[in-house]
Amino acid sequence: MYDVTVIGAGVVGALIARRLAAYDLRICIVDKENDVARGATAANSAIVHAGFDAKEGSMKARMNVRGSRMMEQVCAELGVSYKRNGSLVVAFEHERAEVEAIYRRGVQNGVEGLRIVEKEELFEMEPNLNPELSCALYAPTGAIVCPYGLTIAAVGNAMDNGAELVLNFEVVSIEKTAEGYTLTAADGRAVETRYLINSAGVYSDEIAKMLGDESFSVHPRRGEYMLLDKECGQTTTCTIFHTPTKMGKGVLVSPTVHGNLIVGPTATDMEDKTDTATTTEGFADIRAKAGDNVAGIPYGKVITSFCGLRSVGSTGDFIIKAENNAVLLGGIESPGLSSSPAIAEYVEELLRGMGLVLTPKADYNPNRAPMDAFRHMSVAEKNEMIQKDSRYGRIICRCEEVTEGEMVAAIHANPPAYDVDAVKRRTRGGMGRCQGGFCSPEVIRILAREWGVSYDAITKNGGGSYINKGRTKVAGGNKEGN
Ligand SMILES: Cc1cc2nc3c(=O)[nH]c(=O)nc-3n(C[C@H](O)[C@H](O)[C@H](O)COP(=O)(O)OP(=O)(O)OC[C@H]3O[C@@H](n4cnc5c(N)ncnc54)[C@H](O)[C@@H]3O)c2cc1C
Image 1 (tube, rainbow, N blue to C red):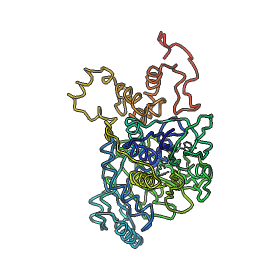
Image 2: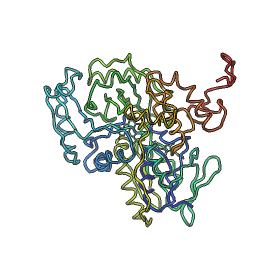
Image 3: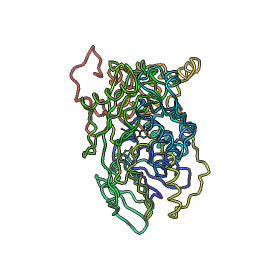
């Protein structure tokens, strides 16, 4: 019997589990996927919002501002990429009143350092903006982060401190028992727990229904993106938004913590909670709207596109409820990433309020070594590392310069990596200009060797996503046929 079970290994569930791992508790994290960070957490804008968007007094506003203040330290402890690059909400002259309204809301929400910048200063800050723009709201506390890196590190740190991760566990029913809950998975496995956290993202309403709570619903809103080559990462320094619409914060242009340029997202209400297709119409919409913000974005340098589903809740605000030894989280759409450390802190308080005894763990370690440490070493340090382990001298991903040593370390660290995309999310191997065109066969070979399985058994991202059907021929006398 676990003390606490978290359903959902997205950024919110991960940070809750990591926070609770500081206490003497048996913690379990279950997720229906074969890796962590596969839901909205894998596909979003990656912005740590300053906190001026959400309505004054809302849970979103409270969690966002607090989360944004906590994020830098959380990332430092977990060795995760984070950069306080600031954000600008740009406007044409006829939109000035909206910028002033957002400024006032931000001040009400408690966001520090907000100010309106006029044209001259704006173009000194960001020379590549659309020349027609007139002013902007500047938020120096706006930041960028790696959302899946944060989630992997948080789950890893929770596991290093004793939490257990159960993957491919799709909760299909929940039974209330005398001591807590029994969760049953699609394949019949069961997990017993005293306390339960529903952090299932776009499916959180369905989990709530299993608990007898039909008070809210969640629908998916699709957001498509284009990601540009690192060559374009200097196009802007800040994250550039336009004044928001009722569908969200609109299309942004931003550098990423990895040095790329991200442009998007669209906002399309959907019914299907699995439809993450990108579309030609979506790209046209992004290009039209991004052009209002930044001039001459070089779309010939797009290296990939992707799509995420926002969890739009029926109340318009984050839904965070504690009842019957369970915490239900619904509608955790943007700014859910920014808010995640604060949501975790609040959930801890709710659990305490429901009688969970939280005794600090004597040997709790909040820190985790960064996964990309090798890349940031000096040449002398790299050479020393290669002397100790020659696999660090072998580059597998040429675009991102990721070595075999880093991949092997990532495969076996908590949480382990079993497929090609899992290695990619941990090491950036395959995330560069060629998008894995050259290195994927090598990554498959390394995964097969490390897990002692056949080359054909390795998938792209679990389930039936097999990459190799079988051997066609033995090339050049290579007896392994690899
Ligand atoms: C297009 C887009 C842009 C965004 N931009 C930003 C941004 O810039 N800044 C920001 O702060 N926020 C942003 N967000 C919001 C942010 O991404 C989310 O709020 C956050 O990722 C939610 O995390 P989560 O853990 O709640 O959900 P998820 O990451 O969706 O995780 C839920 C997990 O639950 C699992 N699960 C679901 N059902 C079951 C089940 N039955 N059994 C077991 N497991 C289950 C899923 O597999 C998944 O792993 C954006 C979101 C989108 C889609």
